Image (cartoon, rainbow, N blue to C red):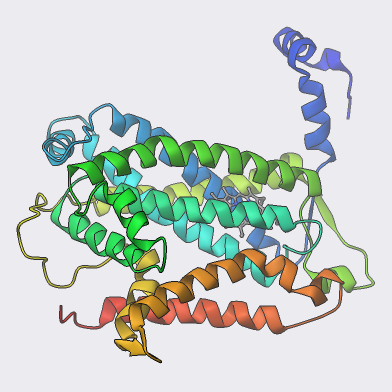
Length: 365
Ligand code: HEM
């Protein structure tokens, strides 16, 4: 292929002199993607990124009408849905894309886990990924309250109550999140600030690091493919893989458009802090496995309150997840080992079964 700069137009040459476009072009041309039977999993990081961009775009549009106070939040969303042209659709896309993004994020996480892509030198890519997952769940938790409807109000009450169970810092954290002892307008204002300023800023930092590292190290191959004494086929990133990535993005867009248009996100009733909690309060699906675990635990386990055991257990689980690249020494040394694969499979099954139970069991309280 002709690589001479004259092939490009004048605008390209003008920009190239000032921002170094040909460097980027060289980088994109050099990048190669391994081809093997697990290559399909490489698409999920890109799909997550695409859905995140959808969130940024629709979130900005929602901000044009949203008002972050207990007196006006519900009414502003109601106005947006009833009066603003396509307002209902933008809100529906934002709500559905957040769920789809967390879904593709989980698929990305478990594929990276099971294919051991966290092994050296990608430990920091993994750490930044776990940070991004925590942020994504934070986005979900804080965003859920913003319409100030009955369901979100009580789910936030339960969610922040659970934070309060943590030993030592629990009571402080609960007050910090709620902006007082109860879930009130102060909580809404805080959640709004976290949702539209704190978390986006943290995301830019961590996502920048994550994508930089992915670029720096290139895509990993699964250990089994790496150990094979056979040629390892690759495909150029540009344009071959990028076009395939686009298919992933368009598939995500198709699912998103269908869900948002056929199942518009509902608003429900306005929150009434003095009303009794409705039966069957449920968190978002991605918190369900934790919520259900806490429900199943007995009141006391070995003399310690069941909820405390559950919350501390999840905290330790999170720490374990973060440290996987440093705990899985066999994989780090390039030796075959199945322990961490099995742990991944068990964790995945546990989450699936408890989520399923959360949606199928009849609520009693
Ligand atoms: C907002 C969230 C995230 C975005 C937008 C994102 C994006 C990406 C993209 C575009 C890639 C390259 C393509 C691919 O492998 O799919 C990638 C790779 C990677 N991601 Fe993420 N990611 C996110 C969260 C996570 C999480 C939660 C983890 C796990 C803890 C993680 C760990 C990794 C690792 C280790 C790689 C390198 C994969 C390899 O070299 O084979 N990421 N990420």
